[in-house]
Amino acid sequence: MRRPVIAGNWKMYKTRAETLAFFRDFLPLVESSRHCDIVVAPPFTAIGAAAEAARGTKIAIAGQDLYWQTEGAFTGEVSGKMLAESGCAYVIVGHSERRQYFGETDESVQRKTKAALEAKLTPIVCVGELLAEREGNQTEAVLKRQFDGALTALTPAEFSRILIAYEPVWAIGTGRTATPEIAAEAHRFIRGLAAAQFTHEQGSALRILYGGSVKPDNIKGLMAQAEIDGALVGGASLDAKSFAEIVNY
Ligand code: PEP
Image (cartoon, rainbow, N blue to C red; front, side, top):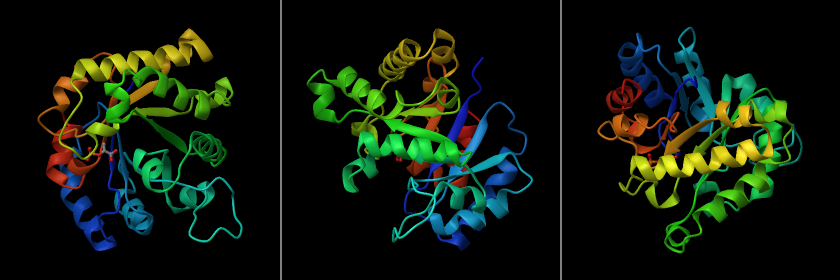
């Protein structure tokens, strides 16, 4: 039985004060929610405030990115060790916005995933196809390329510690969600890649989150799919009430 994970990706939203206000509203709404792991990924500058606000609760904090070196002359970058020290237990790696705007490649995703594991963080590795790739029947080829490029270098023990988020790029921030069936089909394909690369048991144990315009009114249908183990939520995670409704699907 795979334990569900509901993770919120705040992107470049919320100051420290807004983060504290969010947690003040959010904590009572999820106090008795025991059916899933809950993760919040604030921007770097609000990680400390989020970690402080979530201390003593079951909510885990995530970074939205990291660099693969532990330290050095890399202006603007943050290491896994720094995230862990600031209170993160997870880190998002290879988000499509990083791939689209900041030159993230499958190779850098691989390095960052390894670095996250070395820092004892749980990487949430994002994969997903563009609209043109889906329309050109390239979805499986793209997912395989992203999986192979980023994840086949992991040992089985390392692979057992990662989460994958399937996020079709055409569904991110567009209000256009993949149907539960389309998402489940992609999840099944990714699970098959994991089973072929590692073992059948590792494929079965892998938790795959769906991301792309998840909202309170579509989470139930998505989570009804046996293949879908949780959600990575962008816009709807910014509001305490709507994120709590998603957590409490
Ligand atoms: C995301 O940021 O990973 C995401 C899925 O965003 P949204 O829910 O806003 O589509």
